[in-house]
Amino acid sequence: MRLSHIDRMRAIAVLCMVQVHTAAIIPPRGMSVDDPAAFVAAAFGGMAAPMFVMISGWGIHKSAVRRVAEGRNGGSAWISWLIPRVALLAICQILVNVLLNVERGGRFEWYTPGVLTLLAIAALISPILAKLGVKVRASLMLVMAASPVFLGDAAGLGGFWERVYSVGAYEWVARLLWNGTYPALPWLFFILLGTLIYDLSENRNVRERFVAIGLALTTVTIAVAEAEGTPWALTEGNAILTFFPASPAFLVVSGTLAVLAHRILEGDEGGGGKPWRGDGLSFLEPLGKITLTVYVAHFAVLGVVASAMQGEPELELVPAFTATIGHTLIWIPLAIMHQRHCPKLSLEELLRRVSN
Image (cartoon, rainbow, N blue to C red; front, side):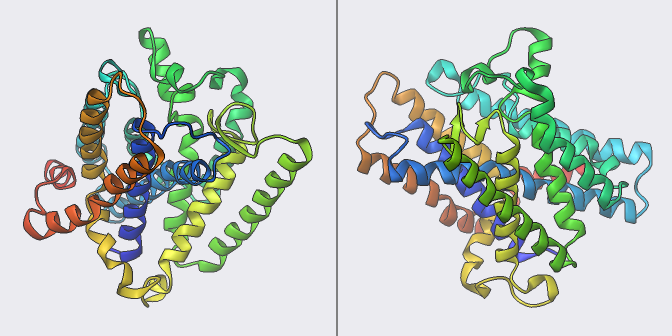
């Protein structure tokens, strides 16, 4: 059974991803990090990937658990299920990198590991995770949260451009596993979180306690930032919450907000009722069915824009804002039209066919 609130969360997650990527390609001229608009954009950006990865972990775990329950968990059965998924995700990652290649004003080298290679790793380990208990996976999630501390300088002290570039096989593996843009350590934290949300779908009280504890810890991080006179959140640099590398505080805070978003969108659907806002957000559900397709497709648009803007000055605030919001929201009606007229033409449908 497809749950409406899951499709809605997938849709919101991919819209946030589109927004932050578009803002990176067409940033407004003269905006500082202290600008309220910059803070709002950064907030969406900081939540985009955690939501996207967590809800992807939910879906991967659901599929793996179902296969175990159906008895389709022998070695050859797993291989025939995993190879198409891992191959397609890896191919899509390369496609994304080519579409938004640094040589044409983009952000990636063709070989750069990213969020889709992270999901490929999640798929590879899903047969193991499907057989582990909730307590074991919760413990592994805490290990992931602490991993930036254990890694220390190995997590990478440089910024974005250092993380998309590598020389040789060793550096590429390092970018994939511990110091890239979305390395397995610690980003599997969100995959594990998604598996727990799936397994606790009928235990609303436990999930709400998670949120309460997470919000309390979030408050602590804000208090520490104020007491130390340190910025609370920055993409990179000296702050309590950092994205590059993902700090333990960032993992806890963004994970808490992702679970909170899931709980809000769920409404009463988990108990057989309706999701939050009933049918009022149903217009998001078509987009939630093709998030991988939209994720790849929006980079094709941004690749054209990045190539056209090479050497051009940045836009003023209003045009940049209009272009960013327009490119983000246009995927909602496009997804509705897609589901009405050509629902079988998608990467999701391709994955289903090759898996079967």
